[in-house]
Structure formats: C-alpha cells, structure tokens
Image 1 (cartoon, one colour):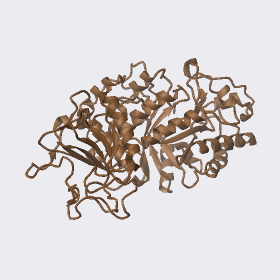
Image 2: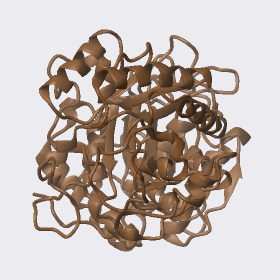
Image 3: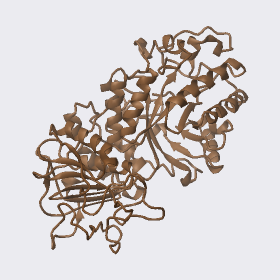
Image 4: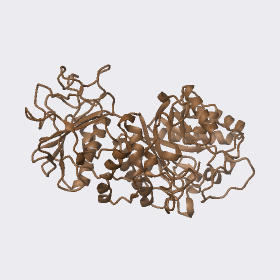
Length: 556
C-alpha cells in the first residue's frame, strides 16, 4: 500500500430568519428530565409540548409535511428522514440571533454562529435563553436510559431539525447531535443571499460510530492553520474522527519531549525535497481542541515497525541491519524497519507512545503496522507482541493497519482494512469473527489519493482509478467476504500525500469524493442511491466555489 488533507470548506449554510427570529439550539429534554414532546404523540411526529407553542409552529390546517422540494434535497449524507411542507420560508437577516436554551449549550452555539458568520457576513449574536423552545431546555446529557425521543432516533449524534416560517429548531440529547444537526441546517440554505430556507423537518442519526478521514502529514506537511481548514471540511460532512499519519520514511511531524532529533533531523524533509516541518506539542493540542469543538476525535498514528526511515535517521540505534540511512524524499515503501531485537527500540516506543498518549485526550493510538517487507513474519509477530502492550500501558486502545490481523492482535485491537491480497482479507475476516472490530478503508473505493480517471497531474493508480461513483458504490458491511456485518466499526477515507504540494491539491483529490465516503459512513444502505446522490452533490458546487475550493469537476 503506497499511502497517501481535507480543507475547511463548508459554506456555513445560514439559518434564515425573518426579523426578530432566531436560530434555536435546544434538545428534547426539559430541565426536569421530561421529554419536551407530547408523550401521546406518535413516534416521529415531533409534536410540540402542549405547555407552549414551538417558535414558528405551523398554523392549524397547514398541509402535513411531504417530500422535500428538489431545491431542498441537497443533503449529504442523506438523512433517515427529510420532509418538506408548503408555505412561507424563513430568511436569515441581520436581526437573527443564535439562541442556546441553556448556558451549557453556549459552546455549540458559538461554533455554529461562527460558521454562519463566515458564510453570510451577518452578526448573528449568541444569546442564552431558557425559552429557546417553549417548555424545554437544552440538556447536554444523553436521554434517560431506555428512552427514545418521539421525534428522532436515539444516540448522542442523533438530532431533529425543524424549519418553519418563524425559525429553526435543532433538538438533540447531547452536544454532538446539536452540532450534526447544524451541519444539515447549513446545507438547506443557498450559498448566496437571499438566505431563505424552505419549511422542513429532518430526523437523523449515523449508521456507524466511527467515521473518519486520514490525513498524511509525513509526505506533505500541513501547518496547523491548514489542518484547521481541513477539519472544517471534515466536520461539514459529519465525520467524527481525524486520523493523523504523523510519521513515515519522509518525515516525523510531532515534537516528542526528550527526543529532539526526531524533529531537528527527522522533520526536515518531505516528498520531492520540500522543507518539511513539524508540530510542537502546543500546535498538536491546538488542533485537537479545534477538532473537539466540532466533535471530532483525533487519532494519532506513529507508523511502525516499517515506514520508519525518518526516525532511524534521527536515532541510528533504532536500526540493527548495519545499513547507513539518509533522509528520504521518494515514494517507494517497505525498505525501512525498526530493530526488532534491540531494547533501544522498545525504550523509544515507550517514550514516544507515552508522550503522545499524554497529549491526546481521545481513546485511540494507531501504530501503523503495514508494509514491513524487510522483516520475516516471525519478526513482525515478535515486534507486535512487545509493541501492543505499550499502548495499553499508556491507557489507550490500539488501532493498526490490517497486517496486524495476521500478527496476533491483542484483545480489543481495532483492525483498519485497506485491501490487499486474498490472504490479508481472510485474516481480517478471521480476526473479526474472533471479536475484533474493523474500520473499512478499502483503497479501491476510499483512498482519496487515487486518480479519478487517469491522466490527471495529481494522484496515483496502484489501486486503480477511483471516480466519484466508485467511491460511492460500495457497501461496508459486505465488501469483505466473511466479515460479520456487526464487526464493522465504521468507515474511513484516506488522503495520502505523495503527489500533494498544496492545500489546493488536497482539495482537488478530496472533493467531491469526501462526500461519497461520508454517505457510506453515515447513511443507511436503503437510503443510498447513486443517481440521487449525483443530483444532491451537484448542488454543493456553488458552496465550494464561494469558498474558493479547488474541486474536481468529475461526477461520472
């Protein structure tokens, strides 16, 4: 696998409001823990609490919701339910405010308001108002155990969005759901003024708990500001994990206390001979914090025992093959490996993984584990027998590329499948049947560094060409023969950096395929349809153009 950044895009779609109306950020739980909907209402009815009328509620006799009109169906990923109704819309104005029903909801409201200001130039002040949705307040805790709100599915990322002539309401049990609902709201508004939403009701929740994008900083370095732009893109399509490939043969991108040569020497290169670069601990934590505000968990990867040339150049004692290593700026793989039998190797891993665990609040550490062409299978297993417990010792759950499936994964290890030989596929399926969860990232569908059709300046073709339809038309639960459907933890798209030289390059490879992978990760299979997706994603081009995104105009 020759492995290969997402940009902050999404034109913060506005929540349109008539003068004096507001964007309402709330949830389904009242201050006393009781659902804010009529307990006698039918599931999915979203009936307002009889204690007070919902802001902008439809008047008696208004036609019931029906299928959304064509101009309101540009939702990606496609939700479980999206309904529209006739009647007046709601226009975002200078008088619109973003209201949080409780002080606890303010943080989400501030992020949402900032996204909308970027898109519209409107002031959109944030206010905390317990009356944001009559009879209910925002609760930042999950719904009471064993209950499912009548107006939406269960889960922390589930939400219900209602747009009427008087405003918009997002309800959820947890802050993540509020934020996911806001991303849907952004898509319901035109890219340019007038910012008018049609009446709509959307109820939704994700299919998979892990929905990720992998960004390769080792081959092409991204400063923190550029990574924040990528995070904005990822958040807009409801991804909730950012997998950072921090080290490889071409560069080491994270400062580790006590190991100064990793960045002093190992960070000085990248593919093609560029200047490289690295993040300080403060840089890294700043990126983590920015992602966390958007409910994205950072998954750091230190690749091992292969893909380690940058580390070995910095600390030659990490190799035991007698070769002289030099900084590397090419793209070939599999030639480097840590010394399996050297105690210096495991001291190094303990220091690096321990420090990274301290800096990373998320539950995962990714240790790579692929393409160790210079090691025999027994050496690989011996290395993993010592490396895996180090991750657990520092309180993290291990993720590794699928080669670990044949290398005695420890209980609880997560396998990330990118696709290779039938033997590899069989090993992954066997590991899944033994209880290991699998993140699906098949290169021939989800590697976003592949060329679209061949002939482009950017991209590679070792896994074939991957046009937008190819990145869309696959089913995670059945893609791998013998894999139990319930073993699939989620889906990840990967953007490797061999041919990338700029943010614009990264965008070209990401868009529009990032949206296709997002739908595979979020949406129910029965809701997915290529022809429908093609129409929906076409409505996003105006947003990409408004934000200056260099997207590929290839939707075949």
